[in-house]
Image 1: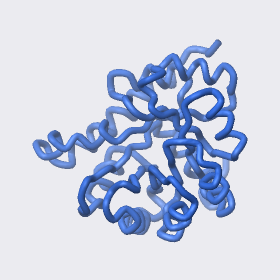
Image 2 (image 1 turned 90 degrees about the vertical axis):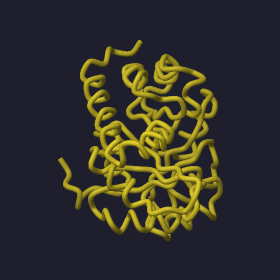
Image 3 (image 1 turned 180 degrees about the vertical axis):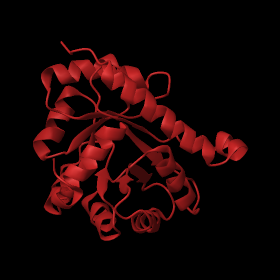
Image 4 (image 1 turned 135 degrees about the horizontal axis):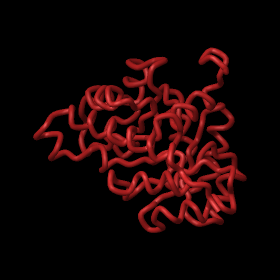
Length: 227
């Protein structure tokens, strides 16, 4: 087994994404200190987290998290819609590029710099386009439209693809997505319920991440063989 020192960035990020089974996302509507949110996710067991580019000050936040958790947790930039933004993310220390759709220019640039890219897709055609363009993993978005069984449909024709459903994934259905073939799940609202955070503090995020990781670990142990 390779040590971290022997692994590429892609290998490290993919391994941690699969091991934890979660890619929790930080999405804020105003500029705030993101480190407490990141710390709460780390404390819950997350090792790869996402900060959306729609969050004010996202690049500075990505850089701050990457520096604060160097070698312990890896930070992805979400909702990256063009190659110029992807390059800025990489220059600010981002470790992963995530987008909601198949954007070949973004995938090409990420691969040029050997940075993993989790490309959004939904239909079977889009998944194939993402794979052919060189996506490291494929984020099925919005996952709630297809439901958990849709992962099985996709894995039946693309058994080698790593699927991360996002959009509408909850504690109530995350295990179903895993049992149907997903390797991890992602989301923002699931981990960023501001009413809960205001009432219970950042500990609510930690408990939420831990609950997902525990549930996903059990689901993977009891996953049936796909058709």
